[in-house]
Image 1 (tube, rainbow, N blue to C red):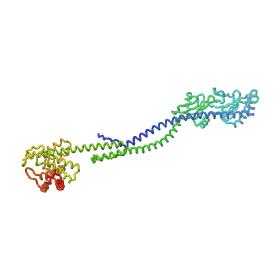
Image 2 (tube, rainbow, N blue to C red):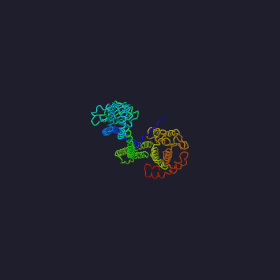
Image 3 (tube, rainbow, N blue to C red):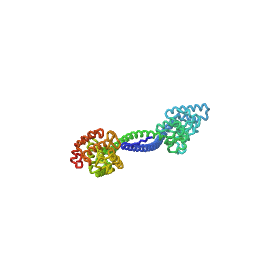
Image 4 (tube, one colour):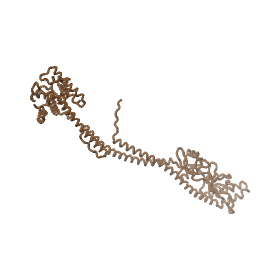
Length: 565
């Protein structure tokens, strides 16, 4: 299985990501804090609204109570109604049942005449024993004649202003005023009643803008709640505190407040904190979403700008480093970015470091070249007839390389390789190396070992490795009759071919102990005659082109002057 190295993200992407994530995290924290604050504000607002509703209802109820009592008092002052009730009180005990019915019908008729002037579900006349004598109004049928309906008042109230009456499943709110005659005696009472049903609860809810629940002796008799919510609220009634608080209904937090109490009946206002919070949160979320979009957009633009400001100078510095590494011009100074003190310090430090490296490299190269020249000089010192041979071959080889348009690096390899091409002769015995006459086959075989021996010497020194092919193969021939490996044609490295031609030319043009040196044109003619078999034609051609240049250079260089002998 192949594992590929995953490249790290760029500085631009990293900066944008960090800035964007930071902005997103900050917005998330702000959003959470705002949501908590909104929920708390909604809870406080709900409680405050219910308190305000309680105060408002107290004032409204007081005004309504006075209005109802005033209406009841006006009705109770009707002379004909009083007369009918007074007649019934005086004659009902002496008369028969028929007479009593007639008297009650008279009271009912008189009551009906005044009932249209008041707003009530039922207008009721009761005697002193609280037995119903007559009733009029939309719900008059609930008040049966002759039945006694006790009124329930608040036991903690100093003066009972309102009461309630429970008739079957219906609860009425009752405002009672006495029916008195001129002598001050009381004939009975007039009830102005209002049914505490869902319609009444809805009217209160519309007025308070809340949910309403009317509770009598622990049971909800009317409310604006759903049936399930009403059942849960009724179950929680025993735990409700006197003023108000919160409770859970259907998993939602609700604030409640007792608005007022009439007898044993309490009126509660409820509002869903979670419902109000949802609305507030939804509105707040919409606002925050717009803010977040704008903030994230600004954060994105800012992060791109910051990342560009950070990454662009680094990118320019990186590009300069890449160009320097590609061109290998380590002596060139990197320009300062001017974008930040840190980058400029880094650039200056790098420039100083590269200057030190370049200086050390120059010193190393000088020592390297000096060591090679020392080796070549040591070799030439063994045979006075070949003194300067390595230097001359090096000069000729570089001239041929330039004619062949070799690169600067390749020319350097050729130059130093040519200096070392005969280094293996250090291991050849003096009696063979310095023999004045022709060599025997055995001695020639010994001489031929200098290429292998030289390559072996250079391989022990790592920095001389580029020159090993020249030292080992500079006696190979295109026809395969060279040594030590018998390579053919283009299998021979170009640098080795160049040194082979330069070596042969210098050997022919310089004197030896057993022969004089030959003129340049004769040596060149000899090389042309052996082109394609012993020498490569294109290298011989390059030498012919380079010789005039070499002649000019040699005339100015005493070391190389022997090249044109």
